[in-house]
Length: 298
Image (cartoon, rainbow, N blue to C red):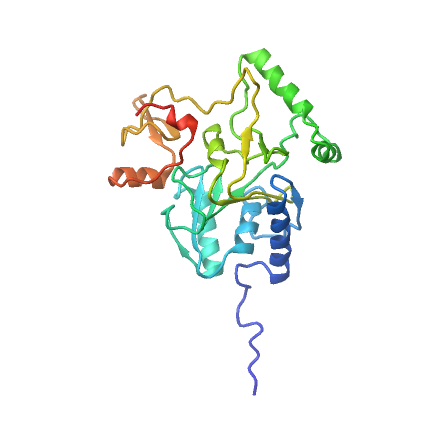
């Protein structure tokens, strides 16, 4: 008698059915072929609500393999609630090895940060994106933003940046600072801080962006030109920590969190938890290099 094995597993590998995973991978291929272009996709239902990382999770589950080593961070931390829950879910649905070590991971999912440690060619970096449309702040209608992207008509965004500078003396955009990809499309790099924007430029890794609520995918392939929007006389600049150093390591060339203690004292600490752990353990992780970091004094 032939045993019926169809329903032995209560769920498919990586939870999503194979047809939907194929659809997501086809859309990702298109996104990689046209860097910065937003590709619509099905955004299937997940056991978490949209807005809590479904887009990044769709991408991760569609491309993950049994031999992958998976890492996930939430605003730089391996130990936050969002990161822990999604890590447990992915591990339960796939059985893959998970890690906190950036260098050891082959697939990294993130919410709102790029790791400090330099990424390699064998790594894929997946972003959870709340709002994929960089023009939403200047144009409310979707059909008009699509037309503006098609015609590379970004005048409204330039005017908005100009008005901010005239009103405030600086461009008042922090997380999610708009960039131009491959000299063509304007892209929202998810709400990563300005500090991380230069690390997208000519990155060795493949960067994939998933917006589940808005049902959009886009990508930055390896070795792609990524340029933050700036004027000839008003240049882009990352966050300025005014010479502050991490109180645990004394390190200055990393994105810092500002902490307030019960006694009213203020301390700064490196945001990337794995990078911080390695410095505390006297390791020497290889950090991203760009002209902005290189200007900082140790």
